[in-house]
Image (cartoon, rainbow, N blue to C red):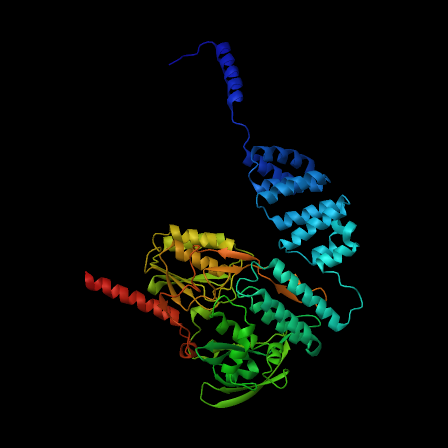
Length: 567
């Protein structure tokens, strides 16, 4: 061991050591530089950010995001030639090519190189650029080419003034056909181009003899032909073409349709079986509406069919009523009486105090119908040592992100006498699937619950989109048992949305642009099937029992008895 007695020698050693360390100390990492550069971008300090990104792309030329950001800061600095080079490099690396192509077009426009601007704008649109519409109408970066006749021909978003009603619809239908092919993940995956073109041409011919809302509903039928549950038309709730609804909610159970809820003045029919729906039977009404339903699998028919049949304009297009403003409904009430009521159509934003089947039952409302408007919540059923977690929407709450909720949920399970967890996803129609991760990771780590027979997931016809991604993640990474009905989507599906707006009518439609492979590439299932079948039925609804929870509790009792008998 050395023993330093000369202070000057110690000081000299420290100084030399410091210089030596500086010589071998690691340089600042690329990741640290990228973090600093992003901070500069947020502060709009473009010069400093550009200098830093120039270093970053030299150190790591393989990451498309770095090239995109380098392009962006050069774009803001007006260095458009450099921005174009960076965007082209990002495209080469597969980084959001349509968006990069659009930005290249804007750069060429700002450089007043019109031919190159149109070339890249065309490439962006062909690649499925999603923001065609409002952005192209208002983006000042394209002002240099907007007056060029090629702009209107290429984009189709700037109709000439003075169009007649029929001309405007034909213009919209041409735009619709083009954007469906450009944006959809693979429009001709299950639908031939010839059949699609034929359907659009047929609607184009019929448009002059149809009401506006009938054209919109027919557009939905064409969207349904694409063969996925996300591609569709958003029926307008406001404006000149606003649709209307009847003050009633139906539910399809097996071959029958029932009144699930209705406005207070129609309380007598709640829970009743529908015998006559306008001019037809409910079975014929469901058969008529089925071709208009965009779906991934057949479970979406009993879910969306009753919803569509509560919309006056859909019912009118299907010719199910004489007068869409006043629809007759013949119902066999819970008491066995046959009752005819007349439902008046109303605006979607008109509020009603609905009475549901749960409200008219003699027993308290079951857990699954207790708080369906909350994105997520849980309750401890102490008698069963069970936590019931209802997951209704894959979205953060304003006051609690899903990540915080997941931490709270699993901390509760760890610190309380909980042997079972039930995740109820039957109301969950989706949201942001990237938010599922904290739930899935929490389940994987929770050894107390992540065992066969301890973890249950209730699924159903409404388990869809981001909820479907979550269900697949749970299926692949945990020992969960699934209970209820098949899901409303398939493990791998065409999903996501970027709404397009028809130029003249302003009707919104979504050609679904993304394929989500949440499961394995070879997974061809149409749904996640339940391990324990527990379908909803009218007797359970009328008595406020939950068939899924009853099935789970029966399974737990059965397993407990078997374990006791084997000891």
